[in-house]
Image: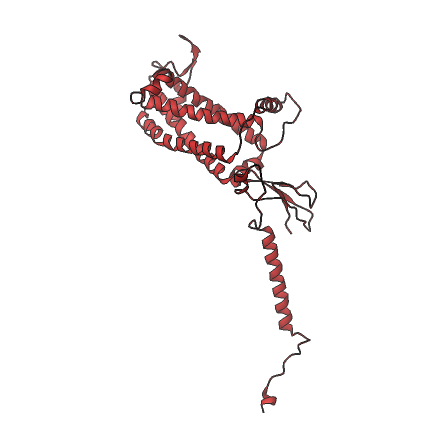
Length: 312
């Protein structure tokens, strides 16, 4: 009875259809996992950067190429750390607010359609004036009149965030070695400038920060320190009378503070032009940290800090 009631079992050497389907499904699942792992960035190794240990711990190594069935590949190059990107994009709106609130304050010193315009906000020499900055139409069209209290409040509140972000940037670049100008930076900066102006056909060295950028960013840091010191001197001229005196007095400190702001605007305009010239890939790198471009190198060629990834 027991032998007759038992169901026949398939032979061990001949798998059933269900077993074959299960094996195929498992094999397909393993292939999908392998594909996912190959695209995952978690398996990137840290670079062996002996010259900059701190940078080696903060960026993934991209140093191997992978073949693709379609014959296409992209290169991913690590450009900007998360800290640099955060401080860059935090500084941008802070600087805009500081300049905007400063304009509200400047209007109060040159109100009544310029009749009482201060001598600081002009271009000239001695008593001779070539032209005054911020004419009446400027304030009228931007609706910047009669907002002195608002300008003072914004300026004195956001200046602390601007100062803290600037100090964090200086400390990070100093300890991480993100960039430092060298004695060759000035010569290289001249070559870069001549090339950008179309006066030289010789291409400057292609690296993360060229000489012109090193000097420009160093200058921005010095400008930021100058804005902070002159701002404190005119914010608390009595309590910080020693600082105010070292800067040449209240009126001189105001002049320095104002023209440093004009220099910021000039740097910003040049910076935007350079970003446009560099293209979308360079701008995207300041957002996601990486430059992504078509791979032009051999398939299995080892490249420090770069990796060719293919959609296999």
